Image (cartoon, one colour):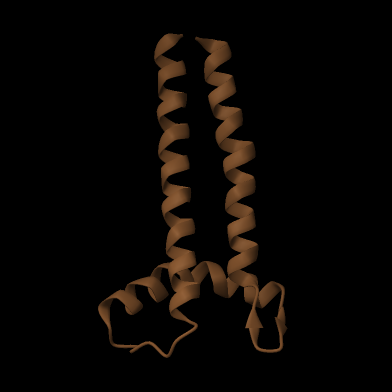
Length: 99
């Protein structure tokens, strides 16, 4: 059983790190959107290509544009925090009970 427990802990850690990195990428995209970035810049293109599929789905379902402010990054960040608090912690606790 300790093998399954260690596997669940590893999955939880990878998920936590991946979600944290994605949250920082979304924050970087939101900060860059405050200025007029060069759309041909490789960093800007990377940020747009990584975040746009998720943000577009949120914008399509919840058109939250009040005064030109896009609230979709905030919703995605809140969802990431929820997943980290619920799913990752549940995996860690499940692994602790198994081991």
